[in-house]
Length: 312
Image (cartoon, rainbow, N blue to C red):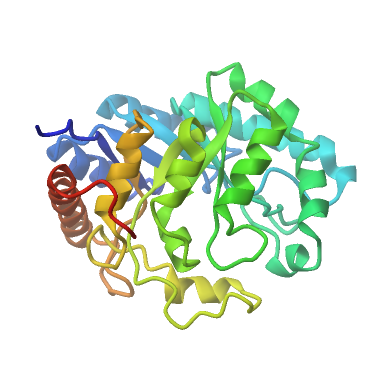
């Protein structure tokens, strides 16, 4: 018997130049679920209203919204400002109809700008417990405010960085917070860069899994997990390829999603052909979307016929 297909969706930029034609591409392929970043002009009401209009006019379901920074600054004295900006981001996400907000796990905000993450050296020089103690101070109020809009706040696993790459640690942290709308966004490409079996975090998260960043890459390759990573390392390993152009075992992933009865759309994050000079053109975007959809549907068919105990 053939299993039911998953609903699919794609992350989009909020560039006013690119968003309209990206929406057209997806609508032409009967894709109605999207994710967006919130990196541009999140304090600008006119900009926020314009993006909201595009999404509403297209009739899109905004499944997830990527916050432009970590949940807080690295100093507890900045708690008030951290919360005020979190509330604003939640307001923006709600205006666009988002059901989930995505935040990088254990990655603080920078003091240098509105849409920046702190330098990785800041987290490298702290223990995980020290980071968690600070982040925990903003979670109750942030989650309570998001709950007013029916929005989940989700932590995303990172590639390479020792303080944020372990999915099991993220899931344990979420469980300890005891917030009903605090969950997990699983970036499968990041996990594969870290040599984590792709299906494993899905089974570990279970009902805490609210959102996906699915894309492909060629895995850990020559990376040494004892090394201290810097941001420029990410582009070498975190390739964001369309599904099936890397080495992730997608059949095992589909088996795991079905085992936990995952009901949300599968969101693919920025699939592209790495380092292609025209990767952000409409033509290249169309090719990437088409390859992703075709390959994912093929893997669903394979998953119907192959054993469910396949190893990664």
